Length: 275
Image (cartoon, rainbow, N blue to C red):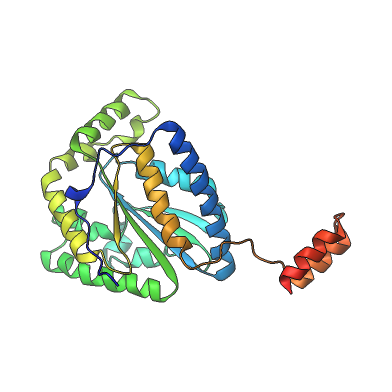
C-alpha cells in the first residue's frame, strides 16, 4: 500500500470552480448519499467525526449547513468550538472534545477542533512550546483511539487566498444579514497569515496520517468547496459499509401486516428479505 503523503497549502489549486448547474446536481447526489450513510451508521453502530478547520470566512459554515440539510438532527450534532471556559482551562485540553464525541450510530461535526492547540494556542502563545509540540503526538493517539473504537474521521481544511478573504470580509460588512459574522479577531488574525501558514503546514506534516489524513479543500469558489468537502466525507464514511435500506425484523412486519392496509405482496417481499 502506498504511504500517505501529507498535503501542503501551496499544492491546493485555488482556481478550481464549479458552475451553478453542476453544483446543484452534485449537491443533490451527495446529500442523498449522506442520508443513506446516516441510516447505515445507525443500523451498524458506526460513529462519524467531522473536523472543520480553515481560514476565517473560508466557507466552513456554509458547507456544514448543506450537510445538515441532508441529515436527521437526532443523530447529527454540530459543535461550534470557541475559547474554552475556565472549567476546561484547568483540565486537559482534549477533555471538552471527549465529552462531545458521538455515541454509536451518530455523527458529530466540530466547527474548529482540538487542532486549536497547534494553531491558535501556538500563534497566540497561550500554551508553552513544549506543550503544544507534545500535542502532535497526543492528537495522533487520540484519533487512533477513536478509530479503534469504531469511529470514522474526516478532517477538512478550507483554504482561500488573502484576496478572497478580504473580498468576503467586505461582503459581510455591506450585507446586514452577514454583518454579525465579522469580528475584530478576523482582522487581527490576518496580521499573522504568514505565521499561520507555517503552523498549518506543520500540522499537516505531523498529523495527516494513513488512518486520519487531512483533506485540503480549495475554497475560493464556495460551490466547488462544498462539493469537494462533501465528496471527501461520502468517500470515507461509505467505504466498506452496506448502504442499502435495512431489513425490518419479523415482529415489525407481523404488526404491519395486521395494522396497515397494504398489499400482502409487499409484506411478503419484505419478509423474504428478512429471512
